Length: 414
Image (cartoon, rainbow, N blue to C red):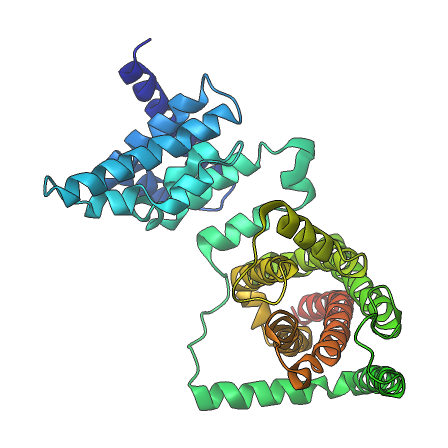
């Protein structure tokens, strides 16, 4: 079988994959027949046809080659086309603008993924301008995940939101003064949780003050540090414990939401993933921070590669920054939940600010005055995260009877 035949066969498989996905969404009532016909017709647009040709190539590569060989071949296929276009542009033999829209670094990275890699070209600007042409293939691929993960974890809620947006009335973006007033009002709404918040702040403050007294009374020893602040010491246990409690409430909120849900909006259904994913992430971070995994791994990198980051204090700080980048990515992805206006979201915003201060002081502090902020920022951030995740669990639990009463009153009124 020639390469051209393989690519043509791959293109047919790619189009069949899309058409089947569109038909599935139409049959499930997610889109109507008019939208389905428009999506199928868009496959004939010149730029989409060109993208489908490369999708066919990726499908063709994936047919005979399994991971990791197929992933490597897909990556170098896209990289080679991009480099050839850039070289021709340098030699004034053509324009690389179309290649930059088609063979992007994001396509190359996605093409390395097992299973999803053949869908890499759906992420190029040439195809993703029609959002459903990206979301529907991803939805179809996710349905094939093992262990019934698609149904078990309610992944359809994510693809519905990403593909169709929210089903509520769109809100106009407020001006800066209006946004500040709204944030002030949301802070006022936290008065319901004033007592637990005040209690946490008092406990944190007393713990930190006691540690500071012991530290100063010991003559500010630098090596080894005071046991109160030492890795595995009281503050480490205190912070890790708060993160584990937050993780528990995040996962519990996610489970309770799907067990007790009563027709939530698309944004609310997608937003609950923030708390589930966040709970798992906090559990991992608590384990890492208490057992100093990032520091041990940082020392290993330093010893093995003799690599010293020029902008951070220690090699381990690079891993802290990686955690931070992952956290920012989750927040950006689920920003509709972060800015939902619920008390839990407001607490999460305040906790995020404290977390940023913690990361900056941990990774970039150079003076004692700035380093002194590290432990208070970390402890208060852990407390606020624990409170935010606990409040979200309470909101999920309280929303069920409220919705049930609303339905009951509506039925009685009719």
